[in-house]
Image (tube, rainbow, N blue to C red; front, side, top):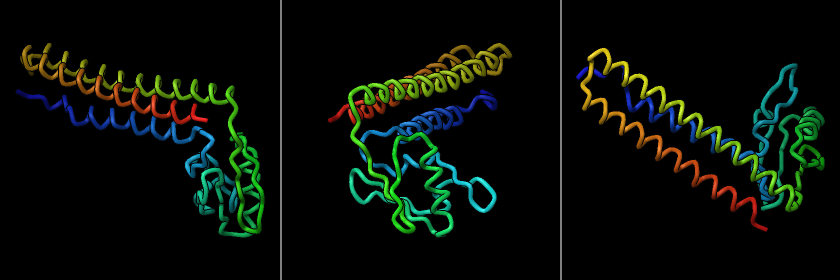
Length: 187
């Protein structure tokens, strides 16, 4: 059986990538609790170029409703503050020397529902990515079967593996979504 073009491990890695991307998307959703990941997408103008916030400062979460950003270079404090204010994350930084304190406001019911909708959109994107990986795997198997590189029975066995992998991935995405939804809706 020559399955040089078909690699279930590659499909597994790609599906794991969809889960990892979804997990990263969810970590950026503000749940009312402080999370250092909330600031991951923020870029700061530093030394003539745009840099991620975590390359010019240290981000800590000393208490559940507070993020503290320690800026390494005192001349960068204003730039970091501006980047946070313009990032539309809904948090106003309080400057304290080279530190910026970011108090997390309480979320109202309407905002929580909006965040749940966003989480559902992220989940659907992740599921679509998993289905694309499934489609790619199935197309390779059909081609191998058509070219007589593998038999019909082998193709069916491999197709079942791909389908199970897809089902497991989508199930994992659903579990993560339910957990995030619960976290967001908690008062």
